[in-house]
Length: 303
Image (cartoon, rainbow, N blue to C red; front, side):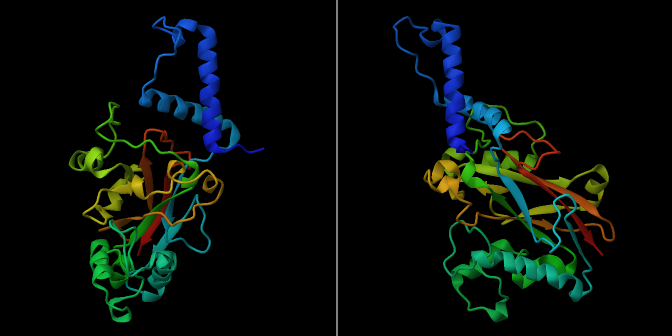
């Protein structure tokens, strides 16, 4: 029978604690008072994470995935191709429609702060003008319907979203915790951590995209993360993760569409297939190119 992820972590932590106590009573009562020494929150949490990873590998515990949109009708994780010709509306309009269909779930006249997504999939001459929504659409430019999400000019946007959040308790990177930052973490993320410290602005699940191989790095061109005035990632306070929902909700699929990050390709090389990889940066997910946890890949060809 499938066990709940939180139960698995607790079972693992309990097993590890019992094993340590049986090896040496001194480990549990170093002060000789007969009472167990209090543990720091960070060490206890680390033990839970490690235990959850070990148990999860053997029981199918699910870590979050990273989705990319738009998707073709024949979407294939291994070869998800986005191909269009900028000069041919018949070529790029299906991708425009797929993005609109995806973003319909986020339509609102009362956008949140910060906004989870563009608040309308209608172009300016087709929608009722609401000042709050117009401001939000400006934040998401050029990744909005007014600009056809960049496809009409060969500078496309894709949208990223996390899934399977109801299984997950994230461990974000931030500069306020005494743990090292990976040396290969992109500089723009390190800069965002310094400019928006977690103790004031909250934690983020950071995200980055790049060419999958060296030739792709040469062809991909500059990338922007939209909204440009926000950090490149997903604010944890807006994510319906396992530590923020009820125990009952942890057994159900994600109930609320999560916040988005748009990736704007400013000048991808024309006429070639560009392999793109996007990934998240957290302490509890070890990057592995062969894994689907916390990463996604797709192919982009602009003719």
